[in-house]
Image (cartoon, rainbow, N blue to C red):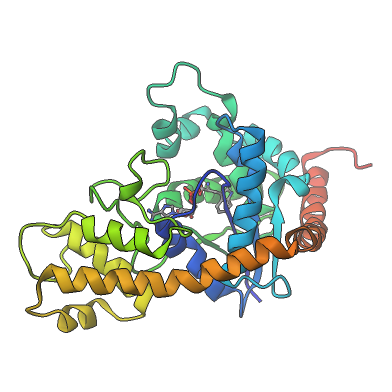
Length: 327
Ligand code: AMP
Ligand code: TRP
């Protein structure tokens, strides 16, 4: 069975962009792949976090994983910080990466822009991400478009290690959804939908109540036309809403165009909101059940045990090949 690994940072609310770009694929891949899904808490601390918020957001994200349908009997669900091999291989990957390639990472440039002091962890972040993936010899890494550059770097580091020390790591492939690998803001289709946007009207959070969702969709920016047509160059806002519609309903873009032909944006947006609500309402119900059941800690314990078994084996091989005296 092919191996799949991915992770999400526990830094704030999860949005529909996270779901469509990444989490939806997690759920779909777990049936016929050996899956490892993490909450990357060690990545989250590359920018300052309030300790209490970090703890809550970590548990919230695990709760969402379970509510979305990730099954701990099929996939290993764990926290990055529970498997120390991540930090250890992360360091070794840092020694393999070049300053120049880390400087080119657009996520680093975005997160450090305008900041007076930039944490060193933010800079070496992609080396830790490479370690996350390579520890499990993952074949596929389901992420949204914005992570493609990090994946390229992971592939380069895997090749570099293999060349220097002999064949060790599998070189992973990125796995992005065909539609919606980059969901855009509802208020500005030139920016990606992001929880860090100060305008909450720009994103739909997975835990937004139904009426909030309806309000946000009805206020979403559109062009002044009335034709529901997928055309990212000329109709980026409507195209973005259509991608969301397609991913929530299972309809193709063509089917959506045909369904709303001659109807204008009003009906389309109203029905889009209902599609999102009927996707998210049951997830929200399960989320509250999961959080109150206290099941999270057992799931994490099991997941960390399964993950550590594979991760420790890889780390041992890496250290042996690099010339460390094994204990
Ligand atoms: P983040 O919340 O930035 O840590 O992202 C977690 C996962 O969601 C990554 O795989 C991202 O690529 C994906 N993601 C985040 N925002 C979006 C978006 N607007 N559209 C598609 N995928 C996204
Ligand atoms: N960098 C990813 C993000 O910001 C999170 C991440 C960390 C990740 N390690 C990973 C994603 C390993 C996939 C695989 O979203």
